[in-house]
Image 1 (tube, one colour):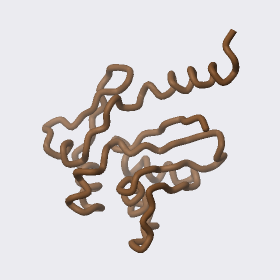
Image 2: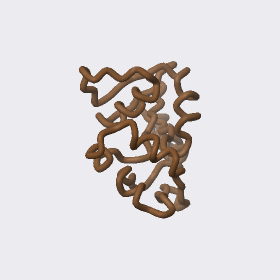
Image 3: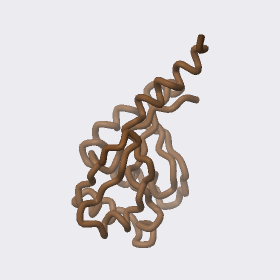
Length: 135
């Protein structure tokens, strides 16, 4: 019989089938006629051009070669009421969108309250996604 941690890990893997197999850079997606990625379940996820352009306007041109989409919003049971965003450019995009960006801070990770998720997802529904993580 499987132990509880193995069962939880298997269930989280099943829940996360909506995540991309490989994320593409913003620069590459902007060049595509139909910007899309393949998901772990084999289906495709399409990005809206207007969202890609919105994000492009929030970052420097060279950062478009670094930023991989979709931006992952990590949810874990460890931080009840909070979620995490990782990656220097990813954090910059989310914080600028929320009006919280500070040019003097160079963050590679941020933890934000979950009540901000609807605001982020309304503005960036195709360029952000949830990931459920175990820690």
